[in-house]
Length: 258
Length: 313
Ligand SMILES: Nc1ncnc2c1ncn2[C@@H]1O[C@H](COP(=O)(O)OP(=O)(O)OP(=O)(O)O)[C@@H](O)[C@H]1O
Ligand SMILES: [Mg+2]
Image 1 (tube, chains in turn yellow, brown):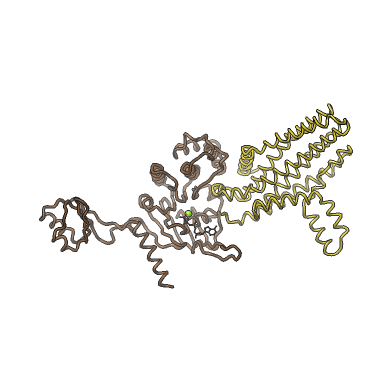
Image 2 (cartoon, helix red, strand yellow; image 1 turned 45 degrees about the vertical axis):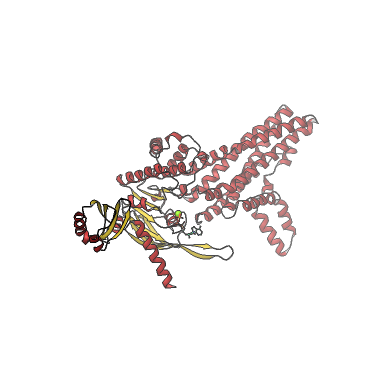
């Protein structure tokens, strides 16, 4: 990685840390330990499921919120506050700035997810006192969550490069919700006719396919995850994020600063 | 090789809420700044000074025209390593301390790791922020931020610096210090291009100035040429409470203030005036050539342009 991108990324990470983004981990820890203690008093079989389900959902939700709400401000806030003036008057290319910001936020989310992962495993150990082989699936689920965040970061950056922070948040969040039902949208498109079919198919393939990233049901049934799915999701996430980032760069390259 | 060549840079902004109309912020501007010069860019509020600087920094894109900086195309990223820029009312990452910010900017400017900490420290010293190097910028006052702005502009030892209103927000001591700093930069052989509407600063510092109003260049020249005693008048001041008749005969316009009298006369009458005072046994205090101040020049230029605009209507 070129050194300017690295410095921009680490400054972004430092900013997130100093703005107390990682404090969400406290809320996460409270939620999870509360749940573990609470369901621990019910039945032994479902408590593990509840902890895993709740843990993974919380990881995803916290991450999505951070990705969107920091992502939309990454560039627009710098334009608004004019902190960019003294950055872009240095030998920093505009694309390097965007890419650096993206890696900074992605890095923040990886670190955040890492700590949450520790929390999930700790809670799991608390309720079941041992790990079994199928628990390795949780790693896959967490990995998929990170991929999801990476896509959302890139999308938030893309939206914020041409619209207001509020609208960007709305767009990004809508895409997250629609993307979570992408498979349903695809099957709907298969049943529709004429123009609707054309439109639904387009939309179904354009929105990020987050349903493929959701493996909670596999975990519940302790079914293995196909290695192809891991490979496919990885490539998909990187391709999707790269496209969104390229769009953001294209727009930003030609933009007049305030 | 000139430090800056502005070749017809022009900028129109689209304004209007629903119906966007282009509005010229800068008419095609042609300007050359020589290497090693301190160049003042003067104009009233809204004249287009900041717009010009933002165009040169590549922060906004021109509607037409181009520029060369240090002999290269102005958009060339290589150029940026050799220039420094202080924006108007600068604002910085407020989660960083002054020291961290400068360190970050030194990294972005490609200052080698070996030189970095030495340069950061000496720059902090130079702008008088040594004592607050570890304070987060969100706790800085306006004048302190201005100093950080100046620090980040000279941090990487650029050949050419652009300052947008460098004195704004500073107290009298701070202004003095920034003046001295700009003089030092000149001695180091740097080129300084700065915008201001404070004429005394320009008068004290600049080799040449350009005057811009409503996006158009109104005048350009060496300070001495613009302000020299073109009118050929002198001011005579003497001790006394009345004007001798022989002075009046010279056509002097006199002002009596307390114990002194000031009179403005043509250069040619200077000797006659001294004789007249001597005859009356009045004590001469001073004779000084009347310079058109930059201020007067400025006002004249602007009024001239306005009246021309009015007659054109
Ligand atoms: N982003 C913008 N959109 C529309 N008009 C703009 C924009 N920026 C500047 N202008 C217009 O361009 C003109 C020149 O503005 P500029 O900021 O260059 O003036 P200035 O000489 O720096 O003034 P000041 O001394 O007040 O800083 C003004 O009429 C201003 O309204
Ligand atoms: Mg200005």
